[in-house]
Length: 449
Image 1 (cartoon, rainbow, N blue to C red):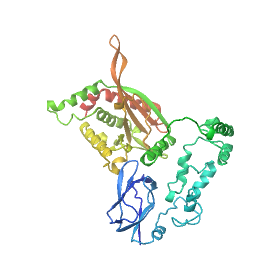
Image 2 (cartoon, rainbow, N blue to C red):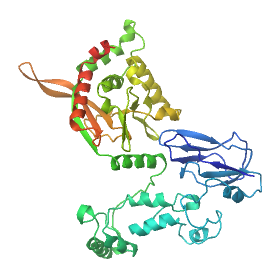
Image 3 (cartoon, rainbow, N blue to C red):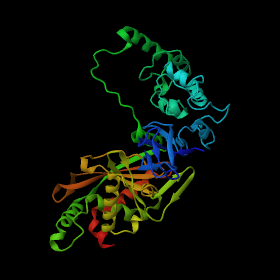
Image 4 (cartoon, rainbow, N blue to C red):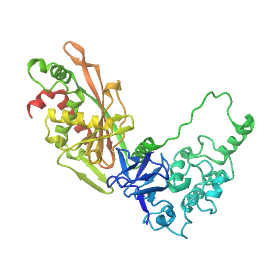
């Protein structure tokens, strides 16, 4: 019997992977170890082998598709073998979106709303997706399906709904009848009302062709692949937690002095320190401060709060594929030199695509640094399920009382976002005060081990 290749599970928290590239095409001969496709998560890139000798009978998803784990992606078997029979015996089928009702026809069959409907300009729609669209008054005409053979499934409708403002019940029903949708509403909470729909219809009638004129060149780029995964994670983080950001600044004179001394250390016979950066020093200060404030070194899972004795420090890394957060394990036990070495290794692995899945999960606190880009303050988004994330900003000269009046001294901006469900403002502020003391006296912190 033909071998059904499924989307592998890359870690316990990964629900789907994106097919980045197919290395084979239908009809190609492969061995069990042949890499047939490259897949991506929001954390890393992986190669998927065929798993069996034979020919590629069917490719079930295109490059760029976001496929749930354990769902079939291809069928490998003997030339001429019936791939549909192999698929029907698979534990995960193409209709995983539909838990009840009669079983779907084999892929490629001419069924209502299937391939024949696609030829007529429509896309097949799963029952759950259709019911959700009806409840929300959302036309399916502009929705792109990510299911097998372009099938629109529930997650496609859910994603599309996020781009639309809220509607009143009456407006929701009117939208289904074809009323044009304005970009924003005048109702409570920004909801679109019947009156807004009427105004939109009138505006469309006044403009020839129902569109704006002289708007210039417009480029439309679908949000797909890793960018879409990151977007969904950011949205979920904000939607599922009460986030609050506190801003302050820390004395940075000794930080800069120490960094300058490290840069010339090799000339004085102290090798291995010249590559230590200001960011490494901040990571060291964070790792040594967090154990004094264990409520910050925690993760919220549902109604359970887990605090950790050791600090597993996440560090945001900007890569060509998007944001990645590798983890420095047991950072609270490491020396500055070891933290710098591990931070450099992990950042390089993220940049060149060799980072391992286990190096991208399990953090208890995250640091994201935009200081080198001149940012003086921002609002970091929680790396859920962590309860806090620190944003590191640039160093500026700030006026402070001193001497006979006011003096200017270098200060590093810090932006701390907390989950206010479990961390209150005053305790978070005390953590910031402790961290500012550690950064401002980084030489004493190092002396203390």
